[in-house]
Length: 185
Image (cartoon, rainbow, N blue to C red; front, side, top):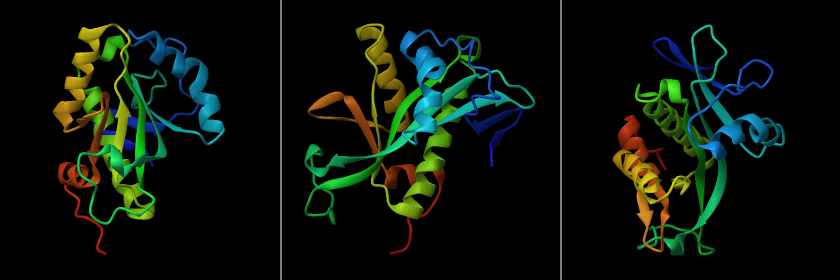
């Protein structure tokens, strides 16, 4: 079921239906991912890509890509209570977030992040998920990196002490943003 925000819809990427040919966000790597890799990675069950379109349209205004992964509890400053002995914690990995140049500055990135948060809550409810993890892209130099890192920090993501390009947000934080209670244990 697509998520709806006024005239905008978020749908799972359908390469036969959604027009990605003209997508341009200003970062070649993100443009090329959508145009060249997203279809195959989704078909091979490596990721899921979700696109923002206007209701009744097929032109992609923005997208995000997510997949599941693991992180080592020892990467955190404090090991979470109840972490398994093997130290691996389940995570939702946010691979990309991109908004087309023509749609930037209209809040579509925030809509995409809220969608990621909702997905993470559903995954955590069904399979367990400790956090959302992402790597901030360095494309475009230090200023662009700091701008991206600040954008994610505004949502509540925190950098790892050992690697400031890697950021995370616990499901406890995500649930507080979405307004969902933790699953009863």
